[in-house]
Image 1 (spheres, helix red, strand yellow):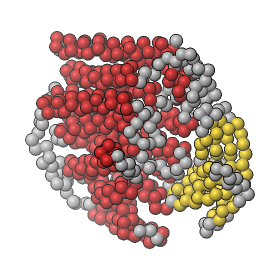
Image 2 (cartoon, rainbow, N blue to C red):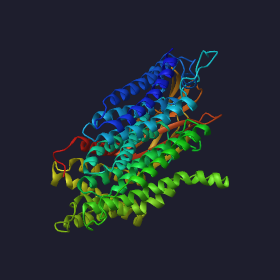
Image 3 (tube, rainbow, N blue to C red):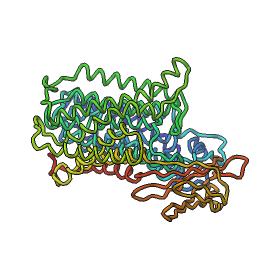
Length: 625
C-alpha cells in the first residue's frame, strides 16, 4: 500500500510541475504582481514528493519485499536504523531524495525572495521546474523506486555491509543538500541573466544560497572522508578516487564563486565569472551524477551500473548546458567594461588570482577523472590515475597559492599599499626556519618539503595573527581561512610522518620494531543482530612504557554473505593508532596492518572550522568589512 501511494504521489508531483509552469507563464505575461498561488502549488508539489519518499521509507521499515528496491537493498535482520538509511543507500532511493531536496529548495527560495523582482522569481521557478521535471521523468521511466515483484519473496538480498555505518547513513543526505543547492544557484543565475538583474543587490541575495550549498557540500565531503578512513580499512582519508573527485570539483567551483560574489557585492565586477561559475558548479554536480550512475567509473562508491540510465542523464545534462549557454550568449550584458581593471595590489586582484589557481586545480582534478574514461573509449586501454599524478601537478602550484592566500585578505578593497606589511616578511623568515628544522631533523626530502612546509606555516601564522589584531572584525573569514591553513598543515604533516607495519601473525605471536612491539593476545567471537563478529585483542607496547590495547573486528554478515574488516582506532591530539586484521585464507594467520597517523584529529577539526566560518558568514552582518 505504501509503495502504491508513493508511486502515485510521484505522478501527482510531476502533474504539479506542469501546472506550476502553466501558472508561471500566465503570471509572467499578465500582471505586475507575483501570484502567491505559485508558492502554494510549489508547496503541494513538495508535499507529494515527501509523501512519496516516506512511502518508500515505510516500505523499508515494514520489509515490504513486494517492492523491488526494498527486496534488493534490505533484509528482515537489518537493524531499524539501517533499514531507514537503506532508503537512500541505493540508486532509486537516492534519486528520490534528490527530488525531495530539489522541490524543498525552490519552495524555500520563493519564501525567502519576496523582496526580489517578480520576473526574476518566476524565471527562477521556471528554470528550476525544468530540472525537476527532468528528474521526475528519469525516476518514473528508468529508476522507479516502487517497482512491484510477484510472487512476493520471503526475504530480501540485504544492504551492502559497508553502507551499514552511521557516518555513511547521514553522508548522502548532507552531500545532496550541497549538490542540489547548486541547482538553485544555476536557476537563479539564468533568471538574473535573462532579466539583466545581476547587481550588488542580487549578489547579497544569492550569496546566502551559495553559502548554504557550500556548507553542506563541505560537511558531506568530510563525512565521506571520515567513513573512508575507518570503514574501508585503508587508513587514509583521501585517495583521489574518481567519485571523491566528483564531489571535490563542484566544491572548488563553489568556493571560487563565493569569492567572486564578495567582489560583486563591493563593485559591479566579475559578472561573467559569476555566470560561468554558477553554470559550471551545477554542471559538475550533474556530471558527477552521470559518472556515478552510468557505471563507467570503477569505484567503491558507485552503486549503479546501467548505461541506459547514464544515457538519459547525459542527454538531460546536454540539454541543460545548451539552455544555459543560450541564455548566457544571448541575454548576458556586461554592465562594466572595466571589470578587470583592478589595481595590482588590492583585494579584488587577490580574489582574481585565487580564481586562476582554483580553476587550475579544478582542471587537474577534472582531467585526472575523465581522461581514463576517454582513453578507454578510444583505445580500449584501461589506466588508473592515482595520487602521483595529482601530487606532481598540484603541489608546485599549491605553494604560490598558499602565499597569495596569506597576503590577499590583508589587502584593502580598490587599492592597497605595502605600508605596515613588514610582519609578513617576519612570518616568512620564521616559517622557513621552522620548516628547515623539522625537515632536517626527520631526514625527509629537504628542498621540496621545506618550500611546501614554509608556505603552509606562513599561511598558518598569518591567519592565526588575524584573530589577535582584528578581534571580531571579519571573524567568519578568519575562521574559515585559519581552518584551511590548519587543514593543509595537518595533511602535510600526516603525509610526511605517517608510518605503517604489515605482518602476518597468529594468536600469541609478537612483532617488534625499533619503536614498539605488537602482541596478538587473543580472539573472541560474538553474535550480533545480522552478523557474527571476530574480535582480536592487540597490545601495542612503546619504548617509553606506554601500552595501547586495540580490538579490530572481522564481521561476517548473513545477507549478503560478506566479510568486512572493521578498524580499531585510538585517537589523541597528536596521532591516531590504527589497526585492522584480515584472515589469511587456508591458514591460521591473520594479516595485521598497524598504522600511526599523526594529526588526524586536526584534519577533521579543521574542516569543521572551515564549515563554521561559512555558517558564521551566513548569519553575521555587524562585523563584516
